[in-house]
Length: 200
Image (spheres, rainbow, N blue to C red):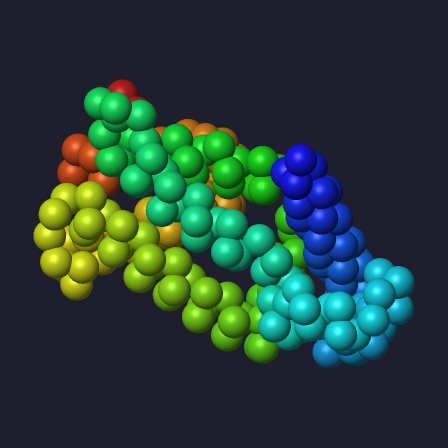
């Protein structure tokens, strides 16, 4: 009999958190990150500043509000993959399932510009990327039964996390993701130069 109230409470918390994050991003895009205060965000979301800090550690975390979920998803892709599915196949599918929708989101370019034009957000993103790489590397090492500081596992984690950056500017995002994972799976081969025209 207690499951429903708990579920309702968790849904309400999640909705409040999303409302705050949405209000923050809207204000950041409209005014610029440095011109928006926590009070502005709280007012826009119709909550108190205390409520904002219950859900987020600070302004930077409001921009990257799904960071914890993304890290958990990366680890789950390794640990909870289907029986018989290879590690790289699972990570490839995870990137395709989670990143492709983000890459085509109508606000994606504005979001990237916001982060790249704001030193505090760039620094936060770099720290977040490092944390994700360490967590994914550890999950890969655990899966393979090797030490968590194994350099091959750390390298693979970093390569996987770079895939969205490498694919971002390409016309065909899916093909770019597949191309990088093909390299990780089969090894790098020199690309073939286009054939010279006859008589050239």
